[in-house]
Image 1 (cartoon, rainbow, N blue to C red):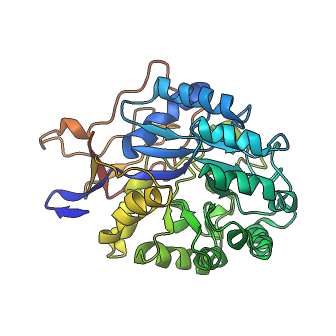
Image 2 (cartoon, rainbow, N blue to C red):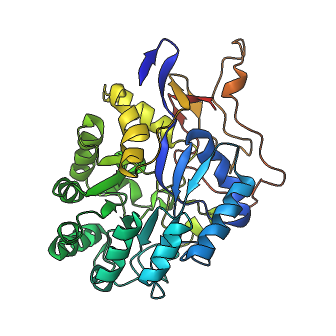
Length: 373
């Protein structure tokens, strides 16, 4: 990364965890991810689930059909009761880079998920993942417990399982780490990494009370846990702590139900928000490692040649409930327009009558993004 007078230039960022959905929702949300991230690990908890070689190929094709030029979706498979070592090996040959564990009934589209104790006992699966060179991504929660304790309780079982020690060539990722204990677990094994979201760096449990738009799984935790996450991320000392947005779009009708829907749509603002938070912490020099370097290195991806630039220009996050236009940076009308910094027009018919509300809707972020594809 190098500092420029106009902003900060970094290798094209990498999102290690994104939900793109399918159909019309996919077409609506994909441009936001593809504009700010050149590559992304795409979650498989669609309906139906992406669980084998055929569904990997089909979902990747669906994404690429509507993806902007240059965006690379990196595919995963959903571990289910139908999974076998043969299914895993075939999916790896079809291009899947990782497998994903979801706790049954623990989050969105997790009906096909597994009981944690069953998952942790599947030695044949872990051996197959090791053989295939795939990564084991883990939604580390145990649904038997209250939401605030789910990550801690699952990770106790994970530590007791000694999986990293028993499968030393298998790389594990504890997804969307939300607790100080999660960071501790990551620190104890060289083949365990942790992804951290932008929203867990700014939210606490107080921000979720009475605000369904801030509901996510794992839920935001205490101020102490948030402080631990911020310290680990901003210090940038561990190459096994990297960015995964867990951007999870839900339409407003689902988010507004009494029980809510768990997931926050952060794709349009995640990189900009991270630039702001790193700058506020006087750690802008560590942003590149977190969003561009550590994740691809852990996933053993080729070096990114393209670059992106974050600039200290305000970005107004539009609220589609009152502002149906596209999100664009707030600009001085008298200033020269940088054509490369404009957002793309929406695809035909892209406006949703039941909108998806982005994180920080109606608020301003003090950083924007420019692009070099």
